[in-house]
Image (cartoon, rainbow, N blue to C red; front, side, top):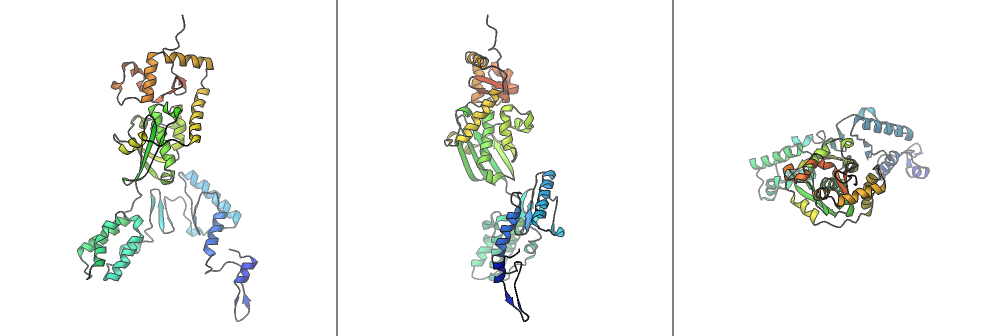
Length: 402
């Protein structure tokens, strides 16, 4: 780092020949690291990098993303006069060492090159060495599940009057080491449910609840088909828990099995009314699982908080209006179909089924609804109009007048 004139004067030192001053920041200046960090962040701002002092990490979900970011970094470095040591650069890797850790596609893990000494640490011979070992394990506790239980025999020994190392202590020490080196990324789960009037979501890490959320459905959303409400619940959960789940693999657990088939399809093949929501969750790495009972999320969706996000309500209204806008019919014709649908018993049964949700099995459907079973997930109701994707369902309501 180049020093300005005033700072350079402050680094003046005497020698037997004459006085000298530094033009660039020397080692040992207490504020040098903070200033270097600031300048590096300023130089590479906006490129989406992980940057700690002179360790720079860039990521990409695909090779094309990786290469594009790499070109941007090299171009910025050329513009700012930053040089890299080629021997210390790693490209196209699925795991890289970064500031004492190992960044992998599965998450953050301990760097084996930095922790080799842990595996080779000899057993303690006295209480002082035992305390040092316990301190080291505590420092690494983020990588050791249930450490407080595993190190109980060692802590008891530290409190004992006499130091007697036995097989019990050796086994405890070895178990902790194995747990440390076999560390895997914490499994994250989201349990989501949608009721007639609300949404509920539960975030779990290793089967322990980390956070919960719920909200009510607005008037437009309450008219959604059940499958659309369930997908809206996933969108809500991703937005609610974004800081916990973005960039990692997440299991989404639901009690609505038909939604799985929709989510397996490419977005372009999904019903138009669901495509916007599928795009909203596309940036997340989600895996979907069916579970028959989800009591917490189910309760949250029924005892929900009021929705206080007017922007979300507006976006929902705009989307529904957009679908209706592009239907190739005049307003008078659409209103006529809505009026006739209102007095058509079969269409009212269909509308009621869409609103309350389809049964799990086809044989549980009323006889007049059997013909709609195969494309039930594409059906929606809005202001008296029944929609299949972006088309109006008008069977039996558009007969010619005599």
